[in-house]
Image 1 (cartoon, rainbow, N blue to C red):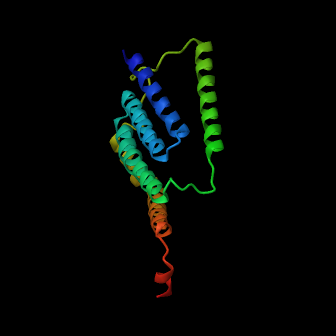
Image 2 (cartoon, helix red, strand yellow):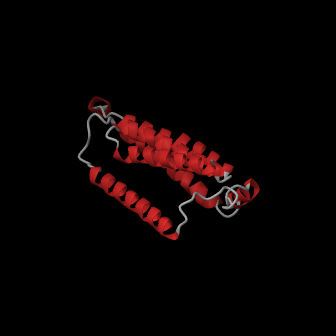
Amino acid sequence: MSNLFFYLLSAFTLGTALGAVLGRNPVNAALSFLLSLVGVAALFAMLEAYLLAVLLVLVYAGAVVALFLFIIMLLDPQHPTAWNFKGVSAFAAAVAVGLLIAGVVAFATQGRLVAPEAAAVPASGADLKAYAQSLFTTYLLPVQVVGFLLLTAMLGVIVLSRKMDPKEDAQ
């Protein structure tokens, strides 16, 4: 039963990730990305890494995707700029599909095309005390630097998205 659930979650995650990469509407692509992150969090939960699953949903699905949606709506996708990322998206999708096919072929040739059982794979990020200890000692400075960079990027987006009024600049 767990193998079937694993395959269903994997197919859901892969389908929504492809929807995020190949979606024509940026808002729909961001929402597909959100669903893909929820699918990955469910896979983490299957591996009994509950802390990583909750952090993925709270930080990435909650904050980062909301920031993506905010920026997409500020940039007005109805008037596209000169940037065209369709080639990059198609290349990323082709690489992802190629890696998926290579992984399936590698597992099939070894005769191990079975999902890992939850008890067989130890969850390295499931221990909250060890995670907090490393976060507040070893990785404290990088986390603070990333936080300040995200704050600076958010302020930059707000300043750049403001409509410039020539009459306001003269005063």
